[in-house]
Image 1: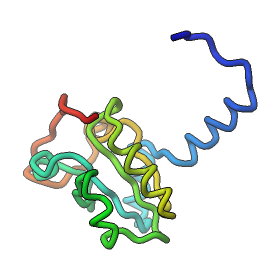
Image 2: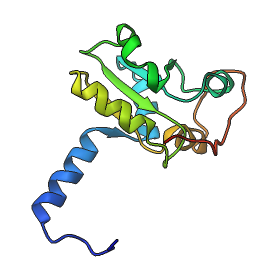
Image 3: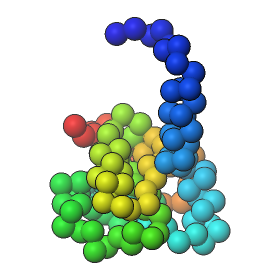
Length: 136
């Protein structure tokens, strides 16, 4: 694997433009929540970790059961998905599936760990959890 940057500047610009359009950072999401934006926030972590702490207003859905729970999502409303941390790809997989089905979707950069690292408000039993278990 090479670390050399590809020379196609147009491809790079298109990639980063799309990346910015479909990702949101923890501070941006917190501001959207505080401003009362109509969002659906989906936590893809285990129910046990969700119960310990999650982003305010989030619902907990298993990636494997996403198709069975589409009735909990509104196509016209932006859905923000997140999982454990920056190396977890469950949220990217969920975002891809939702986008293919016509949902407006964004992925939270860095997952739940990026949220708690900034000491942002959580709901749950009050325990914040730096997870080390992720996904495939």
